[in-house]
Structure formats: C-alpha cells, structure tokens
Image (tube, rainbow, N blue to C red; front, side, top):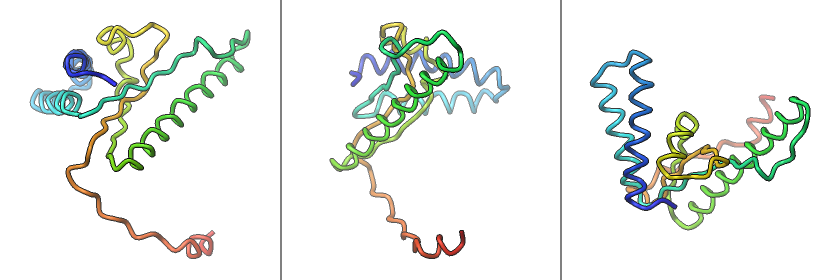
Length: 150
C-alpha cells in the first residue's frame, strides 16, 4: 500500500512519462493536459493504491530462450491471477476496485519514484475504495441459449 507522499511522487513521475508519450503520439496540448490531470487525480485521490510487481529473482533460470520465456510467462500469469484475487477479495469486503496497467509503460520511473528494488517490475496498479455509486446489476444470460448457439 502506498502513502499520500508516495502517491504524489508517483503521480508526478508517471505524469512526465505520460506527457512525453502523448507528445510523441502527436496528441493535442489540451488533450495531454486533461489526461495528465485525470491520471494524477486518480492516483492521489484513491483511498488505497496497491502496486503489483513481478520479481523473477526466485524463478527458475534456463539456458535456452524458449523455456526462459515460458518461465517469465508463468510468472506474469501468476501476477495477473494475484491481481484478480485481490479484486475479488476487495469486492467480498464491499469495496470497489479498478485495475490499471499503466505501470507497464513506466516501470523504471515507478521503481525510481518509489525506490523499489531493481528486481521488482511494476505490472499493475489497483485503486481500492468504497464506490460512489453501486453499478447496475446485469441480467444473467440463460446458459442454455448460449449452449444452443454453439
């Protein structure tokens, strides 16, 4: 979990990367400012901000690229499964959560801003808190109608 001063550092550092990328994409200045402002607000206002990282230091090392790639994919899948479980646990406690993947675009920036070990590769960030409003319940589809279409 990240405290407010760390959130502010993180939001500022990530905003610089985001701005650079948007400029490279040719985005209009007003669009860049709006997106950066929204990003910083989301990070700093989240009641709880959780950063999920991948650490390959405890994973198996293989001499060939194929198996090493598979090992990394297993680790990435494990991180994703942990993220899903985190959101399910938050929901079970009556909390809302949003999963964002922007850390994938700013791994080094996040490592520096939060003084993380080099082995910790930021993968995802979660905004956790109580929802301002409850989402509308969706009507479940009849599973038999889906089976009939197959």
